[in-house]
Each structure stands twice: as structure tokens, then as C-alpha cells.
Length: 389
Image (cartoon, rainbow, N blue to C red; front, side, top):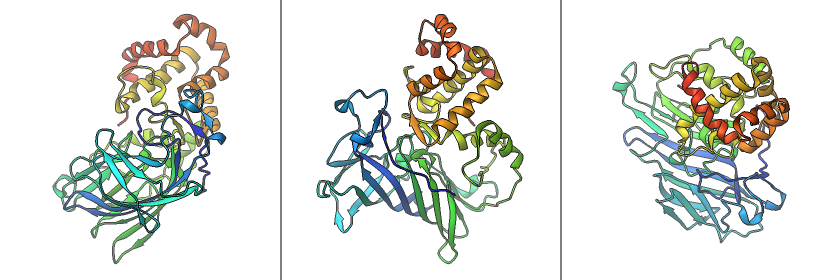
């Protein structure tokens, strides 16, 4: 698996994160955690390797006009998103760093004034544990709730902005990093993550993982249970997807089938192998295309976004072949980048200039109004537009 460049050169606004990611950028995360099924918690530490940004060398998103408008820009402190986490201590080299927790903004504020400003790369250890009953990212099942009723089960779901209840982080999709992990769990259970397993210490039942492709926080995933694995032939599925979307970047495709899960979710999740490499400055790929609509929740925005793309293909481009070629071109151009809605609109308009005049004539020169029309389109065609499983 290739090592991807994590240089951050794009400053943007994300209303869903309180972290100062435009001042400091996460490059690498390492987890050292124990899984406690009795207490329903993960405890240990997370190591965050962070760099100070040289904002003069960064590009600005369309929402930022000048230096005075840079959001998420607090200096002298490292601000992380943190929800219902029990923070024990924070260490830089051999020194304890002062910190405070803001429960109103769900943030962890770390005082780093003692670290000289000429030190660009900063590595800190945060010792913590998750909440036993208020972690939005973790789901715990007793053995009676599993299929064989022999062992308990735990899994995470950080999408869209729940990683902050798994570990202190810059919980915004525009920040991507590689990660490694060391997970200890009770025998005979198996730990899995959204990363390659590099080692297993049988005596201590410790699992080691490494993900060398940069991923946003919501793609950090962990599951622990009494798993049985099989090698399935999915070459035809991957081959079909590659014809539409380009080369598969992740080398191996694994999927975890939960109790009573529907296999139809496999194709849905497979598409994320491409679109997840492109992130908007708000939630997941395509989701923030509806950011101009009010009162759209992260976990509800999928349908509106799917409806928008369906509408554009069905009523504007009017060609599945042409729209498929646009998607492939779009993914190729923006892979490993972050962008916002305006960037998507600009690229669409440059790719399909022939549709601008009739489209704008109908909707009076506005994508926002068109998105409202999408709601009507969704109601008409919703039986064909399936929400995520």
C-alpha cells in the first residue's frame, strides 16, 4: 500500500468542528487502547502527530476572502473535538500540558504555549477513556444479542461527526492522516480496524494495525468480536467499479457482515472506496452539496445529496454515459483533495457548459433554488433513490 502525501494546503470553514485545524494539522494518529467489555469503554492513549501550518503557503476555500477571515485559527492552544471523553493527562515529551474541557462546545483545549513556536512538528500523548453510556461512536452488544450467543461484540460508527466520542481529534473531513494502532482485547475475541493488521501477539491477544492511505476521522473504525473470516471472490464487482471510477487504491477489499445485515450494502460501501478520497469541507463526499439548505442534519443529508446527483443526471445531463464519464473525471481530478460546494459547482459548469443557459433559465440562475427543486424531484422518484443501509 502506498504512502500518501499529507501536506495540508487548503484552509476552509467547517461549522461542524470546533478544532483549530487551520492553525494545526494532524499528520499521523496512533492508538494504544484496551477494550473493556465489563465497563463498556476503551481506555489507553492516543498519540497525535501535528504540524503547525504556514498559512502564507496555503490556499483558501471560496468561503475565505482574506487572512482576517480564517476560521478555526486560534493560536497558542491546540483545540480538538471531544465528546464525553474522560481525559486523564496530556504529555509532550516528558512534560504535562495544561488542558481544560469545554462541555458546551464539546472540545478539548490544550495549552501549548510552553512549546516554542519554531518547533513545527509536535507529538502529544493523550491518556483517556471513552464514555460507557454516551459514546455516539461505539455500540456494545452482550453475548445474548449476538448470533451464536457466546461472546460479546463491539463496533464503531464514526460517520458523520462521531469520531470525537472515540478519541480527541480534528473531526472534520478536510483533515486526513495515516494511522497506526495497538489494540488489546479479551481472548478469544478478534480486533479489526479500517487498516491492515500487521501483527498479532497471541499471548496477550494484542492486535497491531497500520493504515498508510490518509483518511479523515470518520473513517477510523474498530470492531471486536468472535469473528469467522472467509475469502470471497469479488473481482467482478471491483472490476466493474474500476471501469466506472478508476483504479482501486486500497489494495484489498474487506467487509464486515454484522448480525442480520443485508448484503446489498456491500456495493454501496464499495463506492466509498473512491468517493471517500475526496472530501468537502463539511461532512462526507457529496453530503455538503446541500449545505445551503437549512436544518439539514449530517445523518439525514444523504438522501438530499443522492437526489441532487440523480436529478442532475436524469433531468439536466440526460445521459447515463455522459454523467458516468463526468464522475470518473471528477474523482480523478480531486482524489486526495478537499473541496466545498462551490468547487463542485465550478467543475460541473466547466465540464458541462452546454447545460448552463437552459438550466439557469429554468431555475433563475441558482443552484440553491435548484436544490429546493430537488426535494420535489426526490418525492417523485424516491422509490428509485435508496438511503444508505
